[in-house]
Amino acid sequence: MTGPETSPAWPVEIRLAKDRHSLTVAFDDGKVFNLSAELLRVTSPSAEVQGHSEAERKTVGGKRNVAILSVDAVGNYAVRIGFDDMHNTGIYSWAFLHDLGTNAEGRFQNYLDDLAAKQLDRDKPGIR
Image 1: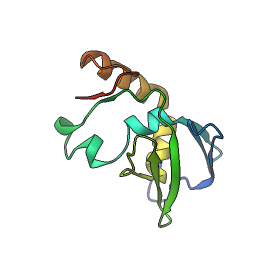
Image 2: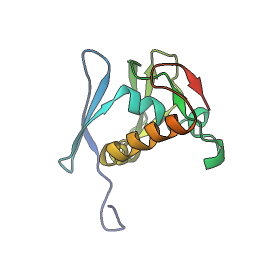
Image 3: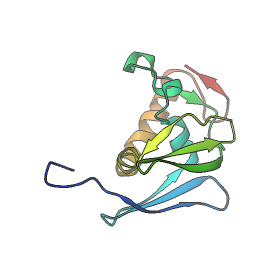
Image 4: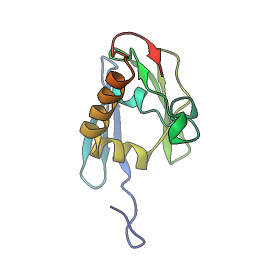
């Protein structure tokens, strides 16, 4: 947790796996997260996925095998990740990636629950 007297964790390494299905992010607080392409894609901080309010948030199915095509710096505060389904509008701040890594298990379970509730599947494309 950060407060006025501490600064947020800063990435010291970002590495795309050879198979392009995960991204490893190491932070200066010693934490290292291996984030699946699927989790990164379905939690994309883009307006396309998140909407402009909780009511507009989309659940995206069919992303089990999505791959990362590119990881590009956005200033010194984030990266833009391009996926092989042509989604590339999410800007992943360092704070977002750290939070996603810290809460990956819960976020993924929430995604699975949302898929089930909306009758979507990890292997079949669909958005609700």
